[in-house]
Image 1: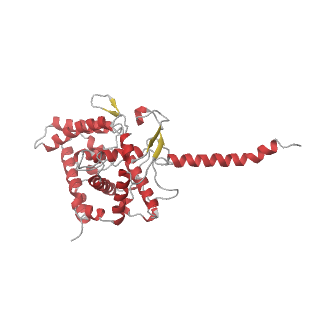
Image 2: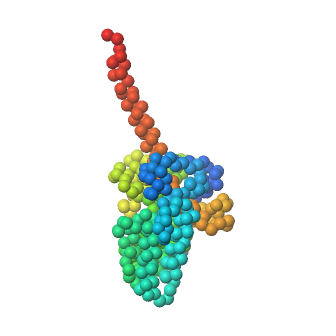
Image 3: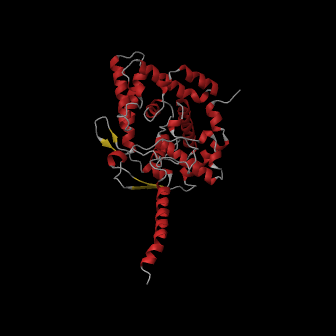
Length: 340
């Protein structure tokens, strides 16, 4: 009998090694630090423009979480606790509607408003192509969401062939994964994380670090660990901010290069990975044996790290360029002051 998708993923040797690597980062057995500078102000980053953010561990990253989220009453909030309060409010309302045997048009309208509330929290409500199918004020919305939840919740116990067959039965537009829908599904599916551009970039960075520490050429890392990333908002097409690849490498693909099914499977695998870490760690802030919400905290740590995964490298390159420039002008300067 063939293994199911989740079992095959977890038993992959490199995945197992990377799980242990994340555990060592989480419990402090292995050092980790990360730095970036806020490119915009408090209303977009939670920090003053130019603020130099730094963490010295994954726990430190989670504890320094900031996100400018709008509450249902229109107030701007910043902490993870406040964000969770907003999301819990919408989650309870969405689940209540999905579980109703009969739903009225008012229920469907409320469902859509709750979805828009989550998108507003995530800062993507003004992008009409994000979670486009979920914005429809239609009774089919509830059916589509329940079908998606069923596939996501049970996909790990399916074989690859079973998953493909079930996926093909659904309208791909109704189970589309993007920076908006991943937020919705994270609320209504079991142990499903938000895999957006920041979390994907952070995972890519950590996989790259893992490869370096284990003397594994990054180009040979298994497909299961090749997490994708997305460009930062307003970023020019140089894609330097959240691209975890080394120069000229394309191990970690941009989300735009993935099919929808590939992106869904990546989201599932990232969720299985982090859930496995949470089930094994003994750190009270994250351990499922000690506290609820450990998975969300670990996701929050990655979210903060992934704001910019190349800031330090860019600064080093700028320093090298300055030194080269100084060396280039030194002979001319010396000649200018030489005696006749």
